[in-house]
Every structure is written in structure tokens, then in C-alpha cells.
Amino acid sequence: MIIGTAVEQPVLPIEAPPLIEGAAAHVRDRIVDIRSGPLQVRLAETAADIDAVQALRYRIFYESLGARPLPEMSRRRRDFDRFDNDCDHLLVLDRGNGRGSNSVVGTYRLLRRDAARRLGGFYSADEYDIAPLVAHNGEILELGRSCVDSAYRQRPAMQLLWNGIAAYVFHHDITVMFGCASLPGTDPDALATPLSYLHYYHLAPPALRPRALNERYVDMRRLSIGAIDPGRALAALPPLIKGYLRLGGFVGEGAVIDDQFNTTDVCILVKTDLVTAKYSRHYERKCKDT
Image (cartoon, helix red, strand yellow):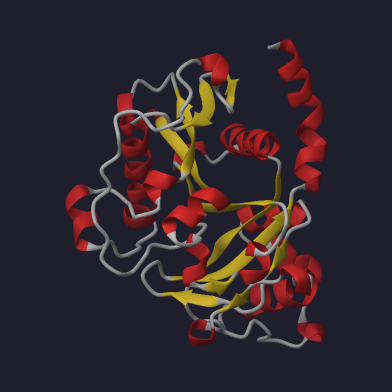
């Protein structure tokens, strides 16, 4: 499922450096390095890693899900924007599939506060007023450009991605994660149940609540609260959004239509208490052993 959307204005091709500045040179220095059978999750370290991530995103977003690429994206068959070089990229690799550069089968893009300052802001700010999040005292993390190859959407690959995020969150002492999550289609009334359910049952507290920009704001209250069966509405949500809600996630106020991706976006935020509580003992023990 897509988190975040493509920047609609023209963008220049990304020229990634041969080695990402600050990337681990040795396995022992990696912030994230988790394996399960032939699968491995780690951060991108080279230009080839970023190229493979962008190729996977293109296959999933544009070839599989029907998003409309910009001309340069079509020519290169890559999904890219100006944020890529300043973000960390979490990737899942299948070392046993014999596909070379196509061994990247899952990815998340991770953007922290310092990198966002260099870029002039967070990606989600194109759709939402995220001032309450930016004003938050703790470290914040924007999640975006999430996708997994269709052959790997079973538990092991998804679990590795979540374990990788947990390791990253723990290492950088992240207190809040956020990003735009997508519902399929651009007709809010056809999405009346999920939008209304999310607004009534999972609206973020005011102190952290993002709000869709006025010019893009779509009211999520399509139905009355009495017309919603909460259990059925929750069950029908995309798996990724359900995963965030299980971690105690919230949504911002208002939805946003993304015509390029044929989706309706909501802003998700998650306090990381449950993530860090679940994994802190494991990573504290790992640090002591290394």
C-alpha cells in the first residue's frame, strides 16, 4: 500500500552518490541488519541500492497500481523525487532469488527532522498542515513510499520491514512517526465508511493533529457515527492502515485526493511507545553483545 504520493510538479532526475554519506561500511556498524532465511532488511548504502528501490517503486506504483508517472519517470522506469537523496531507505532483499539488482523486494522511505530542514520541509506538507508535529519536542520520523513486491506480501517480508522500522526508531529515539496513507479511488462518497470510521474513532489529539490544507481539504465525515459498524469498518481497511491502528495510531483531520495515484490520502501518526516497548529489550541486549 502506498504511503505518500508522488510530487506532481516536474522533478529532476536523482543523481545518487556511489556511497551514501554516513552509510555503514561494515555489517557491525549497521543500524539495521536483520535476517530471516534468505530475506534481509537493512538501510540502503549505495547508489545501486537506491536505484533498485526506485525501480521497485515504479513497478508497484505505476505498472501494478496504475499511477500516472511524470515523463522522465516513464523514460527511466524509476519513481524518484527530490527527497530521495536526503532520506534513509529501508529495504528488504531476497538473497536467494537470483535476480541481482531485483533482489530488493520491499522498501520504506524514512525522513527525519534534520534532513527535512535541509530539504525545506517534510514531504507530507504538500498535503497537510503538519505544524503540530513539527513543533513536537521529540524526534519525529516521516514514513513514505512504502511498497512490497506482490510475491512477498506474506508475513515474513512485512514482519522484517516492521522489525527494521523498530530498530531504526529505537536507534534514533523517535517519539512520533507519521505519513500519508492511501485508500484506493478518488470518490470520497465511495469511501464514506472508512473515512467516517477513521474520523470518528481514530482522530488524533489536538496537540498533534495534522489538518489537510484548505485547498485540498475533503471532509471525512461522510456518514453519521450511528451509521457505522466499527468492527466491519476496521476489518475492511487496507492492511497497512490497520497495522498502524493496532499500534495505537491516529489520523489527522480531513482527507486529500491524489488524482495522479488514483487514491484518497489520510495522514497517519503513531506514537512509538508500543514500538519501542516491544523491541527495546532486544536491541539493548544486542548492543551489549556487540
